[in-house]
Image (cartoon, rainbow, N blue to C red; front, top):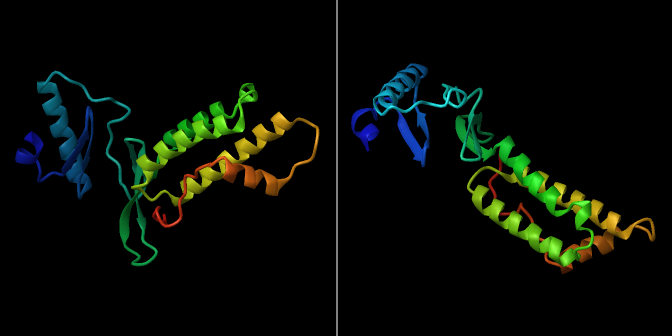
Length: 191
């Protein structure tokens, strides 16, 4: 409220809990906004995080906020610079680590239905949070990773006996109700 009343000409403040971003039209306005925020924080006897606080050009670097990476890219249709967002590398690593933990070798004693149940919880939650972005490519990468991890898990469970049957594996995943990150028609395309 304070920012909107007094400093809205510098840029738009977007806040969530103790994190915030100020979107400005020019680099000069961004620098002025940063100095203003430093003064306000000093009055409140608060400090800005030195590694998180910076001025970036969205057309070149972009920034991470609330698990998303925000970046301006040229639109394939209009050839204009438009803002896009997709899961940040840190968020991608975190979800891969969760998937890896669920499909670890020490969980070989668990039935496939239980492993898929835990995977579906992670997939559903992550997909619902990030679906507002331009996440098609990232979702497809994660679907390939889940499939790879399940193949590794199943082959470890099966051991050296028998041979690998791809068609049976796909049917087994469908039968147990594995969900996917990417749902055609729901996610937007990233240029």
